[in-house]
Length: 68
Image 1: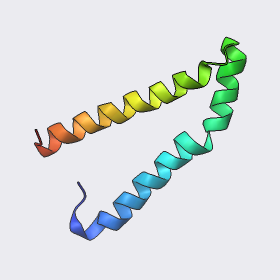
Image 2: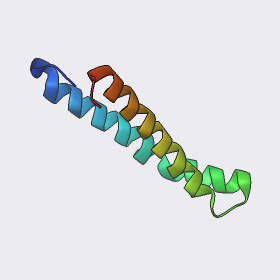
Image 3: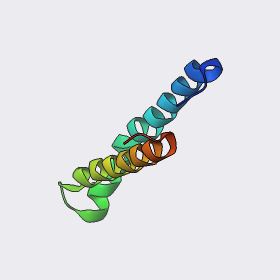
Image 4: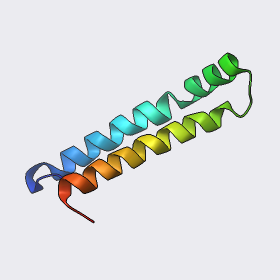
């Protein structure tokens, strides 16, 4: 997906941004979801949201790169 000249930089930047957003803020978001909903199943909503974002990104990448 990245040109050869910037492949390492692009991959490391994408990885670190994703880890920061979904991993770093994970405990805060999960605690907030439990407090807001009162349900101990609320962390599953966070995982479902992350999975949907991942699927959308995968579909967009497949469409852009022309994979079947």
